Image (cartoon, rainbow, N blue to C red; front, side):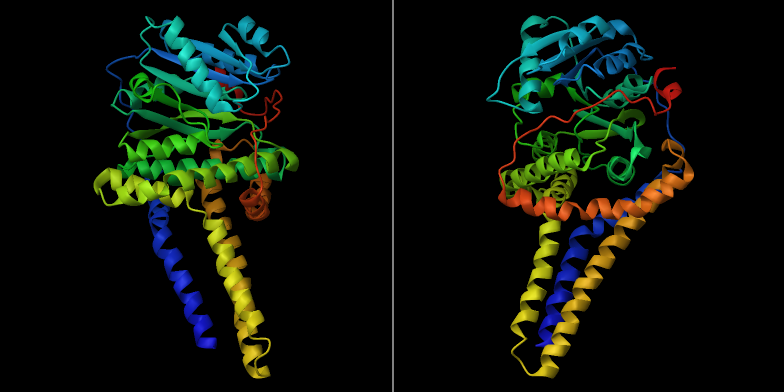
Length: 428
């Protein structure tokens, strides 16, 4: 029985290591690539873009993002700003108009969520501005602030022929508390150790909610934005991988995103994300598995996306559950057998928790050290929140379990005007 337990745990460890080993390679590439001299290529063409901002009751912050877009180091006649005031009960639409945006309003209580709002706005732009000649559409959230060189840098990558380009996602409020810091470290880690290595290695990147650019041609071929799962960004990324659409990454294009600071809001948001990942996994996993064998960029992109949407947290919990069940089953065995099996089970459970914490701590440490200058917080806070980062990630365990069995609906996240980020980097 003891050998059986050891064999099961060894197989679980080997399988997880093999499946996710490529992310260790990504991390090494991210660390070494960070210190390479960046190539500042000059675009042959300055493309014409439209910005779309989805806003629901965002009157406190909508003017800030519009002002940061109007102050871009990019020709203003090549950048139009559109806002979709989606089911708003405040004066978001009026605030956006006063700030200089073209505003559309939408009321639909049946089709709720960012994906529906984006699709509505894109179709309205196609109807009312069909002769504008937009070559791409930027997508932002209302709480974002945009670095002054953002459009210029994204245009350089877009000009190289990518269908989609995503950016470096920083935070406005890293030092607010352990929750906002947890989000911030995760998104910085995503930029430095996922999308940055993907770009260097020539495989597809993935968009993450906001701060991305989509070609007008891709929007037309998709008939708008037909992605309406709870995580429409991951759904879109999976769709691009399957259809061999290239998603690039621009390390020099920076946005500042406001993170939740209350656990209640964080719970609601991550519950939606967890449920959305399950939805994408159910809809796309089989197709991704089939296309892994296409080889080349497409095959690698599909494998990476499959691992991204795989319910790794649930698989880990399932492995723990197997050990617990075996331990309980051995209670009726002779004392010396029950003791040794229980000891082995407890050791596995304890080591799983310790290794989970240590892996997250190391990822957090690498992220904070590599992005030290980009994080707007005092040094001691960076290290203090490094210790709580694994705890923040541990809270995904109950969230993932509840999302598995509960119905989850899209809920808006309340944002306030935050000016703790380095304004000289954004608007000067």
